Image (cartoon, rainbow, N blue to C red):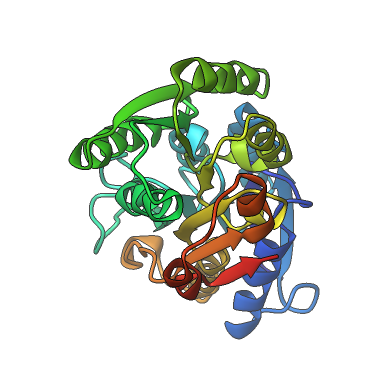
Length: 301
């Protein structure tokens, strides 16, 4: 029976829907867990420095292929740990710029990538905040994890997008949960009108804390995943992570059938999701324009 390695920077509790999408895609490829394929799970539980060792453990167990998700702070190390094993990498960055693959059409080597390229979504997120607030905030705060290799491109794109509509950018760094309080204190001191939270496994794992801080400080914030509005965040816009994991499952199925990762083109997102929490908007004194509600994929009341 072939064995699939599944390594992830988050936790089973936060990613149960993503695991379900991954399993369903394997089923569509003809592989059913426990019948003709086994899956070895390794979860970093937010301790992202564990990811290379967890990946290396899967390699020692001679798994046939590895899928690695929520690993951006350790993505090169994870790829290196699986240098002899076919691997499908999930990232929010540009895999060519990160040096993960040779090109989008011909990745080369033993790895291919499913990317959501979240940095390209910064202009859209700022536009959505402007539509929601009905004004352009003079200062927009951007929260990133500097350990994440997508942080610098995200900051660059955020500044470019903000400059185009007359905004200044306040960059806030958070490497650990302890840094979140400091970041929100800086938002208040700088009188930043809105907050954009970058895509990062740390922030997903600590989403309850982030949503609580935004509410406590009355800060309108936009996130990259619907899991934030689902627990009280204001608004989210981003590529469908469920779809990313489904595509990863399909690629893993193809590799199990003999296709080499080098022959599987890098997949970019095709489905984007907008979620709005009306209760949170009301608590912030915001009225969501009907046109924005009509565009939402999910409205939480």
